[in-house]
Image (cartoon, rainbow, N blue to C red; front, side, top):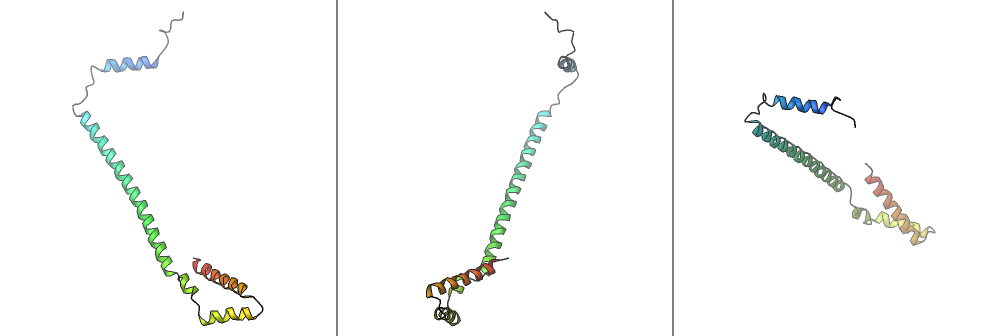
Length: 123
């Protein structure tokens, strides 16, 4: 059997130092209240940071929503484009008399409407 008592063990030495210092070191009477108050303060700071972070995110989303809504309100409405004016009907009738069937003239008018919408939605 091997005797391990002769080897250096830093944990044993550290524990021995702590035990020997127990007669000289005294805990102050206000240590526990200071630690508890520091923990409460840390918790309040974390909660405040959490609330500020979430409030900032909410403000960003609300601002983004309002701005995008205002931008959408500025864009002409599709119902205005769908209303027919005499010029539009003359163009459609000119296409139908030019050898293009009425079905294809309707496709062309939808393609024009799509192009107008795409042009107005570009930023």
